Length: 381
Image (tube, rainbow, N blue to C red):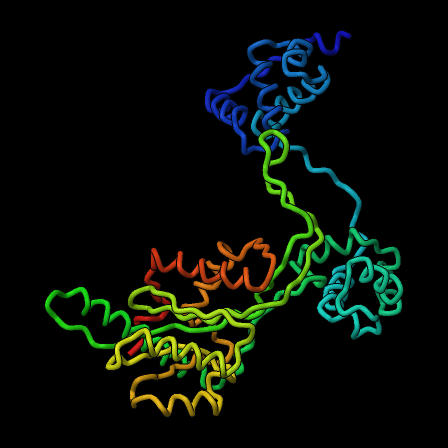
């Protein structure tokens, strides 16, 4: 009992006291550092291991070890654990390199039915094949060690990150054409802002289709939130499908107005119907320029035949490059519409879904948003 009653004089400079006080109040420092700082400061005020331990909820021997370490190495150095020798690593750098190289292959390339490695499978393979490859140290390899080795190299062979391959040899040229259209939008907006100057009779529309919108019905009523019971709507997991619809939509980049049709499909027939909608929406002298992708309906014989019946210059198409739909501003509208109107939507029929979508379009048009494009726009001619 005398061990924790003895008094050890712990001398500290004002700078050390100040640093310890900051650490003792910190919320970002590790808990162990904060507790040791508190113990040293408390011991300085009340030099009793037992009393400090009682005040801080620590064992008196813990306080004593902290004070003795501060006396031996200095108060600030005593905040951290002393390095321990530990066990010598048994896995050689060559074995680690072999394992990482193996992880960079696909599991199926080594005769497994799996497409990718799991860490458990990789550990088993290393145990079975590592010694034969000259790495005896892998004979008892476990999954946790595999995770540590791969983590050190930031390798995640069990995951896939998707990317988009550029398969259009004329990607840059086609992107430049789209950017020139956005540049024209910018010029027309500035011209319209100047009073007394007539604007050019041009409408520029960003167009695309959003297919596969599911008409899903609930099989039981949704339960509303209840304060203190559950915070969200509750919905039965079962549902009933009524089919899908396609939304054909275009945004006027000068006014923000959304032109839209909702149909069962999005073939040439429906695309021509949308073009007729645009044709009726703008005066006869207005040139209608569309930014759109290379969907077969946009370049089909039926579409070209109908366009030939219109006056020259009435419609002009600017196509985005293959895998370049992100260049089309309407994609942002579709994303926002899906997150606001279509998110968690449940309907009793396809007819109801069609009406809800068109009501959502009308709501957007009551407060139109003029979309703008800025990426690489300065580089457009």
